Structure formats: structure tokens, C-alpha cells
Length: 222
Image (cartoon, rainbow, N blue to C red; front, side):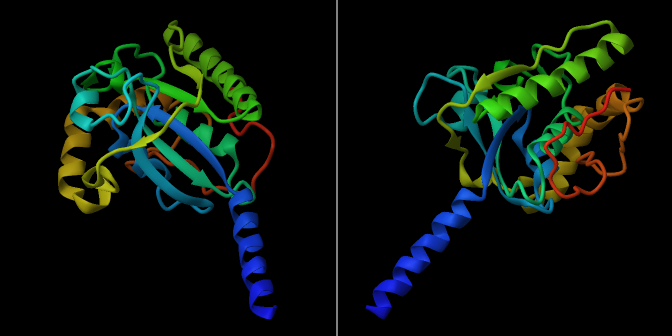
């Protein structure tokens, strides 16, 4: 009986841990670069590169890159909302994408490189829409162009092949060369250098260290 209780208690603990985590999914062009944004942040438990938003089951990278499946390259972020909020993840998302580009992101062209927020709950939908409005107001005032980033209910997530996972760590030189050649950081600086709290000190353009999670929107109007 003691052994059974321990097992049940173990199961209960595992369920409690799982219930305390949430999932966020973002498309921001090359998933190597977006994985680097969220990896190793306090409160982020796992970041996985993959695909979402298409019509073909079990897509492979080559098929997605040929624009034949309808999927976007995404990162799926498992996080502890007691340590980092969804609003903070949204903040980082916007500062690392070009929301004005409807044909891809930076040097990567095609629908699979689109920017998109895939929401997993009505609360995420509300927060994403509120944050997008703040960003739209800022960019409209600066560039007089509309934000084209879609907000879409999450669908099936397909992890990418193993060699794509953690690419910025497993192939740091190739990753840095690609990022520089793609002009990603130069464009990000042009877009966000006047936005409150922007920092280009890191290749991932991470803002200040995450604080304890808050229910408020972390992006403030300029």
C-alpha cells in the first residue's frame, strides 16, 4: 500500500508540474534565430523548432522550405508563467521580427518564413491582439505601413528534424554568419531603435531580464 501511495503521489506531482506550465508558439522567419531569442531565459523550460499552420501532415523541412505545405517555421516555447509571463514572451517576439514584411522575414523569402502568432487559449488571443495594436500604432507612426503579422489559433505542431534543434549552439559559427549575412540585426535596429526598452546588445535582441510574471501587457506605447 505504501508503494502504491508513493506512485500515486508521484503521478500527482507530475500532473501538477505539467499543469503549471504553458505553451506559446511563434513564427518569426528562420526558427534558428527565434530559438535563440527564448533559449536559456529564466522561466523558459523548453524551446523546440518546428512547423505549424499548414495542411500536409508530418512535413519535412525541405518540403516546407519549397513552400509546398503551407506551414510556417515556428518555435514552440514551454514556460512557467510564475517566472515569465506570456506578455513578456510577446514583447520579445515583436522585437525580433519585422511585422511589416508580408513576403517573409529579412533575407528569407516565402510564406513559410512569415511572422505569425499561434495562440493556445482565449487569454493568449486577447494579449496577442492587445500587443499587436501597440506595435501597429508605433510602426504606423514611424513607417506609415500596416502590421501584417497574423494571430491564429494553434494547430498541430510538428517538430523539425533533430539537426535544426539548438542550431545556434551546435553550429555557432555558421549561425552567426547566416544571421549577419541575412541582415536580421540591421533591420531590427532600424525597426525598434526608437521603441521603449529596445536593446541591440545581444544577437537575440533580448530586452531586460524577465521579472516575476504579470498579467499586464509588457509592451508600453511610445
